Image (cartoon, rainbow, N blue to C red):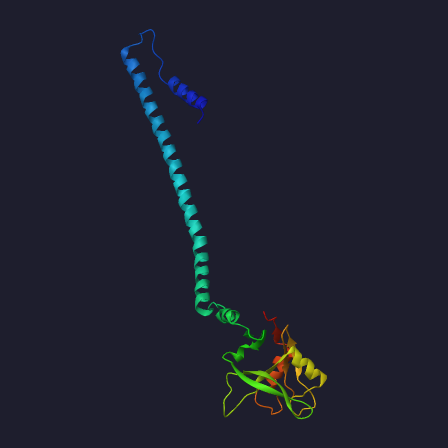
Length: 243
């Protein structure tokens, strides 16, 4: 209620009071009665105002409760459904975790073995399967055309770790020549063995020449094909020898 309306209501009630009798004078009794009516009106107005405020608060409270109940009705089933779905997924569809441990191990493993000979100056690349190989030292002999022994040198045999006396495997033989010996061999001043062909060049440095014997695999021992594959990749890398 606006202030003007309150004023008009108060004025209306005052006007409803009995008018004083001016001829009989405005007695004290009349004044008391007017005062009592004003008090009663004021009291009833305040009670009415309080009731209106209380009803507004009750209405707001009921509206809040109704909103909460409606929210609960709408959301609880959805939460329940999501929970059930999550439970079904955990029970019926286990999470698959990819294990990369094997890949990590494979990456850390060396892909090759490297044999290094500092005396003659070369390195030789071997497969991983040759881990634990042995180096066996042997010798070669050169014979001149008049059947006289003229030259000799060393052969290094790289031996597979599974080689056995009763079951030998194919070695990788590396013949070592000096530069002068190799030059004489190429000129035909001597030959090695009865083969009509000479050794096959593998590489050379500033002091030595390295070669593969002719018919080294004529016995077709176990693993000879693997040795052929190794040699096809040019595994020998010469390094200059420091004088």
